[in-house]
Length: 207
Image (tube, rainbow, N blue to C red; front, top):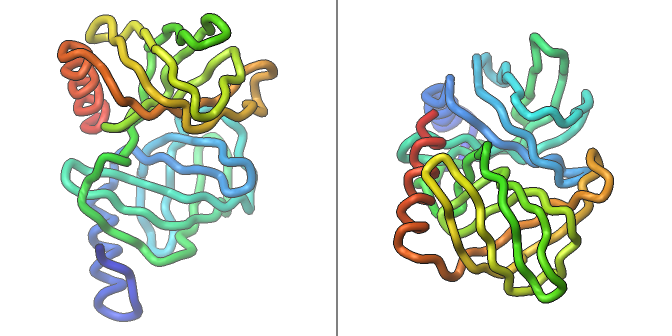
C-alpha cells in the first residue's frame, strides 16, 4: 500500500492515478452513504474531471470516498465536489492517495439483473446494483433485518444466478420511497452461479 507524500512520492502516486484515466470509479457520499458511479475523463492535479452515470443527485461541496480500479490495482482517496453540471463535474482530491492490490472488496456496477429474495417473512423484489467477489448490493422493496440469512435468485446476462447470503445492511433509499438499499455477503452458491458471477465481475471491471 503506497501513501502520497510531498515531493517525489506525491508525484509518483498522481502518475499511478493517471493510469486510471478512462476507467470506472465508484464513490460513496460521506453525509448519506449514497453510492455513485461514473468514469474518470481527465486528471489535472489536484482535480479530476469525472462523468457520472448514476442518476442520483450530488451537490457542490459534498465529500466522497472514491475508489477506482484497474485490472491489477485499486486506488482510493477522499474527494470533494467543486463543480457539478451535466458537462463538467470537477472532483478535488482532498486526502492521501492510497494504492493497493486489487482485492475482494472491489465493486463493479451491474445492470439488467432483476430478481427476488426469499426470507423468513416471504419474498421481495430485488435488483442488483453492484457486485464484489464476496457480495452483492442492490435495491429491495422490503426492509430486511441485518444478519438474516436469505436466498437470492437473479436473472443476469450470463443466465440465472442462485445464492444464499447474510444481510449486512439495509437502509432506506432517499430517492425511492419504499425502497431499501441492501448489502448481502455471499456464503453459498452452486458452481454454475459462481462461474457466472466471476464472468460478470470480470467483464464489468474491464469496461
